Length: 428
Ligand SMILES: *Cc1c(COP(=O)(O)O)cnc(C)c1O
Image (cartoon, rainbow, N blue to C red; front, side, top):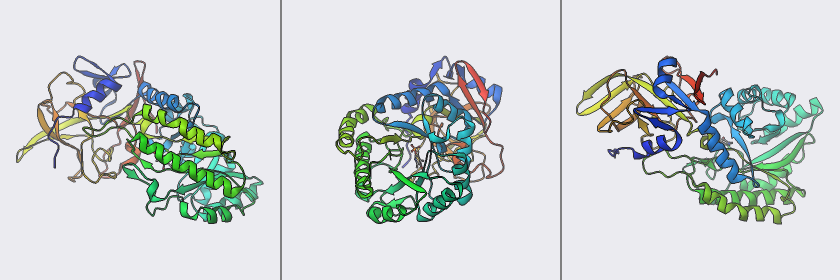
């Protein structure tokens, strides 16, 4: 069923996160129109101030309970990583490429946690050689590789076990745990896993990591997942017979994309934390552990928009199409092809026509020769023509690097950071 209603949440988000002046949507003190004129389209525009604001709101909610590590895969641009580091975050990475990006952004080795189900020998050699805070093991082969590299270098490497929780522990939209997956070790096999990994002389098992899934909007559901993860931590420490240093509760905090979705409620999260803190404090093997949360989407997503220029408008059998210079090759998630089952529209608006009523149902498509390249179906917009702009909000996370950029050989989108009235191009 198509959603023919206007997207009030798009306008709400535009006002909540950014500013509007006359006809113009303003990010970081600069109009989207001016950025598009100066740097061209298609463009991802990131408002550094909005990213900081979301980071601070979360860090403040978690203060005294958990540290925040930015999950680099959400947006691996060096300056975005550097922005979160400057705010006090650590980082979570899942490849040696992300390790290099984090180091280039200024991360110290001990601030970096390394997850991922298929870490290769060369990746492990590089990060162990250069230094790494903790490696989150996801297979026995990895444990053996880390042990051998540690032996060769005369180092003992701190590791955590990534645990895939039992299905009953799950809540949230895009689930990573519960089902059979390649991520981590099954909770059911905890004792056997610890016994096998504990036998490695150069592997120091100090923590656990439980990442339950992405795009969770239900704060109470997340609290329940975290409580379950603390139970896994307690059992791990008991089996090891010594205190844990790290309890990584994963990321997964969601942001609203679709009409009717509500923002993740940080107040509900905050209200649930004293109980969890009491659980930790009551267990001498967990009381001194460092708790970590590793969000990507929640802190990077709301600050970014994707801007494309309309190239042609046509009516085909009653549907009005705006064909733009941007599409799924830059923004797969907005096209609905990154994990959604039913295509629903991201918030889309006309960033240089903000005071014109959204009166025309317009299907916004990209230039690729496939019907998959649809940014929004029947989006209510002002009557737009060629040369005008459309913007997809909530696009700061899982944009270009989560999209098939080579498909049809169009140029990449430019990426621009705006803050305090200044805009500059970002280098990948
Ligand atoms: C992707 C990922 C994250 C970040 O997920 P978000 O939903 O963006 O918060 C955190 N940890 C791990 C291990 C991941 O794979």
